[in-house]
Image 1: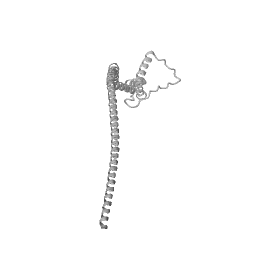
Image 2 (image 1 turned 45 degrees about the vertical axis):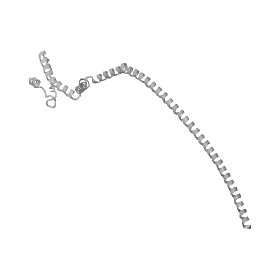
Image 3 (image 1 turned 180 degrees about the horizontal axis):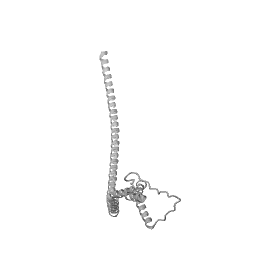
Image 4 (image 1 turned 30 degrees about the vertical axis):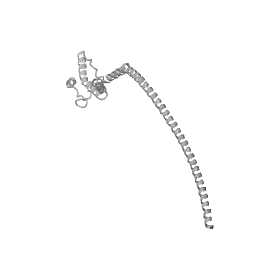
Length: 213
């Protein structure tokens, strides 16, 4: 009866859990029975009461052991908390922002491929044809200007050559004329010198006559 009273008191109070007092109470060991005494057969009511009292005694111990296991060895709460934080950060707060960005980018690319690029190609084709025609016209005009300038330079060169030849011919004619005039002047000077010699010789002869008288 004392043992049953003790068990009832323990079942009502229960052992201190490690979460509350820091250490679990050891399980009560059954008292050794004398070997020479015959074991009384328990009744059905006593067996039921003992099973209930043992279950009530082991329930807080199992609970405390489960808490210790969950705190030391079970990492599922931490992992679940990290998973919930990850899901909250990348799905709830962001609100599928990357998906919307990709959809906008997809629509932009589709719009560019379907509408903008054909318009750009058509506009470039038309404008490039116009630019090509203008470039060809400018090129032809430049060729004509170059040809005209080449012809003008050739005419100027021919004119300069003709003027140079004309000047050379005039210079040669002038030099020949000067040589002829020089020859004429030299001839007149020679003749004048001969006349003066003859005149002086006659004057000397007359002077000689007057001196002899």
